[in-house]
Image (tube, rainbow, N blue to C red):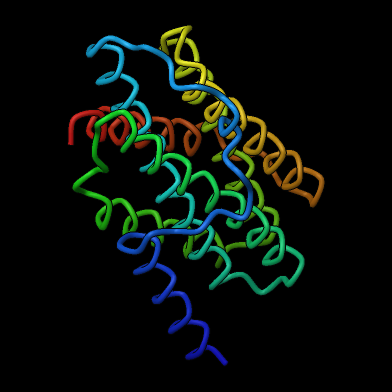
Length: 207
């Protein structure tokens, strides 16, 4: 029933924003020792991981919105699979932020609400557009994570290992969406997504 889906989706949103998540997979850096980083490197790494945590908040919201309004069971299953791996990312990022002495973004409820609305709109469109939105989101996130790998201290192997695994997962999600029949989004929409992402990353670095 639609009412049940709405209640479940609302509950998931509250848990994503306020509750401590549980990862299905072990952290990829679990076997690595904590590196000796100076204060500046820790602060920068924590800020980058805060951005990544916000990205995972947004991903959960997008997928929930898309799954709620999508009418294709195959696409809904693909979204749920991606969301499950994004939950791992969410937990990994939060834990690493704490280890680096940082904090999560104070604007997470706003990030979630905005992304959920976008996801619901995408899900209400045709299946190909829904998948196209998923594929483009993951492709942009993958590029964004590579930029973080370029910025992180080479000795910060724990943070780098987490970010690298996240990047691999995002690329796999994009590939799955393309295999299911994603349509390439118009250049104007891609540009708009990049602008929105830039605003989010610049803000989340500090707030």
